[in-house]
Image (tube, rainbow, N blue to C red; front, side, top):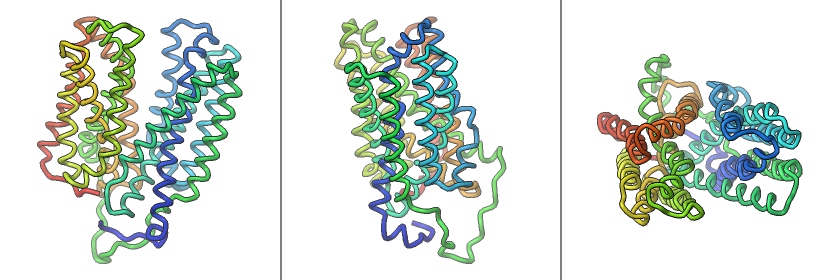
Length: 400
């Protein structure tokens, strides 16, 4: 590794690794618990599906309009405070959304979700910046396993929300207790975060990289944004369209069609557990080429496979491929010389959130004009373009 680290990095990397993984888990667990009760929220609001879709889109819109704020906040108050206070912000905003649902006010729900989405953008940049900091202290790839922590947290939050709904626990009580638990966990975890790099570079005579302009930054970061978007496109296809595909194209009973998402997410989780080892073996560039190829093959297989089993195999392959794309995009963006601290991670996070808003409507419109298999085939263009750009780039980044 290049660069020097303060004594804290040498003394407490394991504790900080656990803390960073807890941050990811908390970030997944907090909103997932409310998401699991969205059907109940819709009933409480008494709105049609189309309007409810606009309301819950507030979370994504809040993250999009945050723009460069997450990087500014992390530089201003530091990564630990950004993660801790940002999680408190998210928790309070989700409690506001739960109160709005209980009161039957879709506008309060929209405001609460938008505020939570903006806070999530701040926490997302902070936790990924800390994850990159920790893996630098270790000298090997670790960020993928931390993203696996997010998956575990999201599953736990969803399970808690489902159990609370089954038990008839009022939404406000459920979200208040769960948010308090998640906020306390994050605030404690942030205390063990590694501080920002403060030591001088090892080579004192090495020139400081010049700051790059916005155009140059976009040219460098756009291929990485496409890499991240390729991974997000798989998650969107699984969450919103895998059940529809299995039911409408493979004649699987609707009650069983949810298995597609479970298979995809399960494969993605396994990929994140194994991803760091693969990156340390192949390097980030080689791993990206393999992952993007798997996404393309998996989506095409799922779209056109003649049987349910082969469709599920395609979804699993796409899930495996998507596992490492976002962590690699964040790590490579953070390593771009000439950018202010956290700017690369912020830019990738913003671009990913902004583009993801239109993914599902685009798939829906394409499937209405053509068919769902054709729409999913078109979705592979994101991964294909990202793959071509990576091949053109040609130079393997230094692995972590």
